[in-house]
Amino acid sequence: MELTILGDTTNSKTGGCSSQGCGSTFEQTSQLPESLQARIANHPCYSEEAHHFFARMHVAVAPACNIQCHYCNRKYDCANESRPGVVSELLTPEQAVKKVKAVAAAIPQMTVLGIAGPGDPLANPQRTFSTFQMLSEQTPDIKLCVSTNGLNLPESVEELIKHNIDHVTITINCVDPVIGAKIYPWIYWNHRRIRGVKAARILIEQQQKGLEMLVKRGILVKINSVLIPGVNDQHLKEVSRIVKAKGAFLHNVMPLIAEAEHGTFYGVMGQRSPSADELQDLQDACSGDMNMMRHCRQCRADAVGMLGEDRGEEFTLEKIEALDIDYAAAMPRRAEVQAAINEELQSIKAQKKRLATLHIPMNPHSQILRQHRAVLMAVATTGAGMINQHFGHAREFLIYEASPAGVRFIGHRKVDTYCHGDESCGDADRTLHRSISALEGCEAVLCSKIGFEPWSALEAAGIQPVGEHAMESIEESVWAVYQDMIAHGKLLPQSNPLSITA
Ligand code: CLF
Ligand code: SF4
Image 1: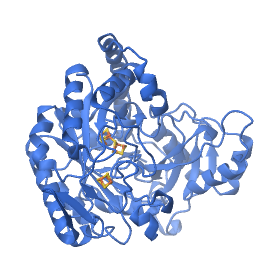
Image 2 (image 1 turned 180 degrees about the vertical axis):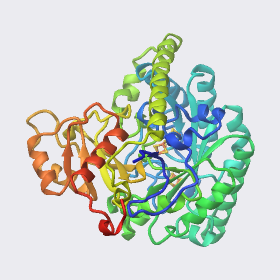
Image 3 (image 1 turned 60 degrees about the horizontal axis):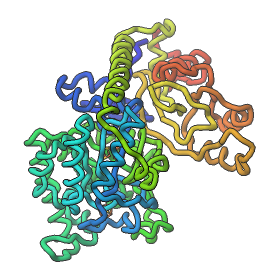
Image 4 (image 1 turned 45 degrees about the horizontal axis):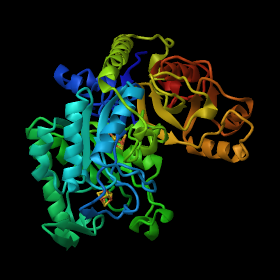
């Protein structure tokens, strides 16, 4: 049977949709023109592969916003790119530059600097562009990235190009102003507050115009959309189709986070968030027309580190102010570390290419095996594409789907850390229970190590713990476990095998 490392193609968990391509995973990345591959190769958001190796950081220099989203409370960061409910430390452009240099020296694999809030970067043009200008002069080896609601985008395109911003994210939740009026109560436009459908129409026109202008100038554009059940869930397929047709590179459908304690309109009104299944179904449905991002962590406006990790505490303003960074001295070390990562990535790519064409004999009844259903598996990893994390130390699990068509990345699930490596785990039982609930739908969890207690609890919940693939490649291990499940008769064929001629 052939192993295929899939991106967003084929077989949803129920065996569903097919895809024409995805810009972010191995199979699709390798089909992109080389010049494009080079532009995303070390961007952890634009390349699923890169996010296992490269880090990003945000600087919170943009406090104001020019619109209101029903999922946002202005006390907190811009929820278009961030989890609501967290507040970032606001920086001046000078402080931001100092912080970027400190982080870049300490984390040489940090390749991308983004401005994503806490308000809208383009509603704070002076602060945003002054930061970008200083960074493009002083830290030339760092890619610059921005995320915006799009209202001021068309007027900002020239300035973005002037500062070498090669990656722009626009949050587009709708292309229909009637739906838009249910998401945006008002916008601030030409010194006036405008409400309802009229406001949504202006916002949508600006977003679409901005998208077209950026694409025309060769900028890579990612579209973020917040999935709001009952509001834009059906509509987002249309959004995906339109932005793809206009040349957007990637579509990132993110789940609405609406908690009453965040004080957002949706939170207070009891608007529900989508389930993991609903999110995956929509991503699968959109992937027919669009390259989909599935590894977004909805990070905060001052996030630092690999996606999914937050090292912000190591780089607070107080700590940064005390540092004297010699950036020129840090650059050779950064180049060395990044070259080593690129070399490793090349060898992983070569390996995947070999595997993708390799026929792995499973047994002679391959026609019967093709009838086996897809299985979701959770993986504990700290990066580098390996199974290299203790079950109890994982703050999140990556979710992969194995099916007769191959292995594909589905998304991630956050959990509370179960084990802190000491005796202080007062409510470890409760935390373990929550972790297991978060893995609902998974049939195996692959990790480097696991204790006896969680092992038993997982088994009791119908999830098979697997520890024997420690320090091995994720996709190959998921595939090996899938084969093993089939070999042990755990995945019964969907139809009567006796009716199939082997
Ligand atoms: Fe930041 Fe956004 Fe640039 Fe990435 S994040 S501005 S594109 S560097 Fe990435 Fe974070 Fe998701 Fe954003 S995981 S929230 S998609
Ligand atoms: Fe909040 Fe961002 Fe929407 Fe502005 S664009 S209202 S900061 S979520």
